[in-house]
Amino acid sequence: MSIDFKRIQKIKRSVSKVQSTPEEKYWKKFKYPVLSQQFGAVTHIDFAQTKPYNFSITCPSRVQIFSCASSSEQFSFSKFQGPVYVSKFRKDGNLLAVAEDSGVTKIFDVLHNKKHPVRSLKKHKRAVRSCYFSNNNTTILTCSDDKTAKIWDIPTETEIETFLGHQDYVRSGIQNSDQESLWATGSYDHKIKLWDQRISEKDGKNILTLDHGSPVESIISLRSGGLLVSAGSNEIKIWDVISGGKLVQTLDNHQKTVSVLTTCRNGSRLLSAGLDQLVKVYDVTSFSILHTMKFPAPILSLAVSPNDTHIAVGMSNGQLAIRHRKEKEESEREKETVKTKFDKDFQFFLSRENINRDLMNDVNFLVGQKRATKLKKYDELLKKFQYSKSLDTVLKNDNVELTIGLLEELHSRNSLRRALAGRNDKELRPILEFLITNITNSGYSKLLIQVASILIEIYSKVLGQSPMIDDLFITLNQKMKVELETQKELAKILGGLDLLFQTSLK
Image (cartoon, rainbow, N blue to C red; front, side):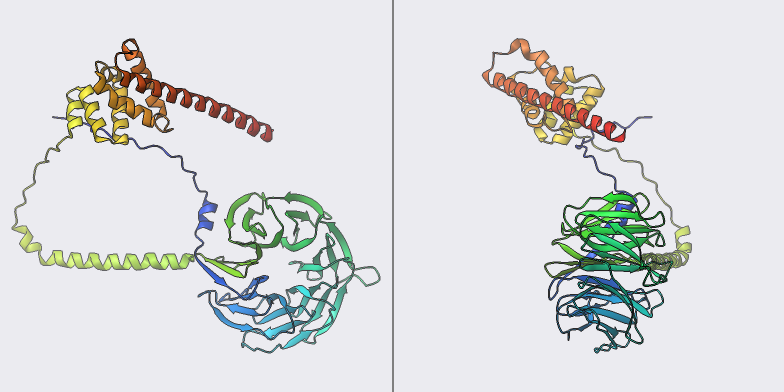
């Protein structure tokens, strides 16, 4: 029984690939980008919490409602007294609050696409920069540049509470998800204040004050309100409210001001966006960075749809970027369609087989013998142990990967010296030129340095007989010295990095 001769395999340069983590694969599924130019800087984006998860974008002159399904505008509001800065959906998605530069907050009925506001809240003296609907859907918090935050009763348009105490613009506010009487506000006076509506006015409703250390741009709560996250300057700070406002961790991964914070995946991921054009994703348990997304301009607003299929980003140059990920149901539907098509084709095949079964019974089949494959010339020479001729043939093909494959095979047979010895200047030139060209290739350098060392050892005694060969050997020697010096420097750098890693772990 004959054994097939193993042909020479091409050796490709190995390139180390960084293995993607499951988290990176998840975020890379957000494809199909839609980039549109709006009527000014996109200062705020908010998704409705109910299907079909439409979202609002706020520009200085108008508020637009976009369809989550088609990423296109459905309708807009534009008749305002001045610039608008924020628009916020109520939890049921029926009402939309729009805050104006005049200090008025208007409530629109988006369920019936009414262009005129159904309520107007008019007690603020300066621009309203943030608003937040309460969990019971009947009240709303507004935060203003007049250094106050107010809670309003929506049906009666009356002011219920006014939070006094900030010394600068109040730019963000939220309600505790567990305790409806607890609110938090963030201000440019560097302070985050927690307020309790249940406390009487004379005792002061401010129950806790936290110092972020820089103007506070955004605040959100995590873990059912147990943790409070604030963003200001290039820092994000995590506070344990239950422990009396203890600072848990500070994140300074952004290079410029962090403008907005949000969460996704049922609150298990924290997202931050900033003027450095980056969106960063954190794990809320370890607060380690899981993924980073780059955008073409400084980011002012960011939102993720409740079903985690859309990411919308608003930028200072007026661009709106929307990234979309297919839902699991869509993928399953596509797989089911493919499976159904396969089943139909297979059933058709079986029906054809049944029709011709009787005819096929009378047919005699001839099983052919396996045809011998023809070897290449260099494989034939290698099979006959004519190593020098095989190497010369491969060098004439001018194929680097094939030549490396043959040299690897000769090295495994301990026949490199035999293949390289006994050459005249014409036969020696191709192998020297090959070494000079490829010895600095990091994927092949280890093997080629061995080949060059064998050549120098064999032909060092006959140098001086051919000026052409002498010049090639000198060039090869210089290349080897450069490569060896490079390897030494890399070894030093790796040693230094290992020391740094060990020190940081300790």
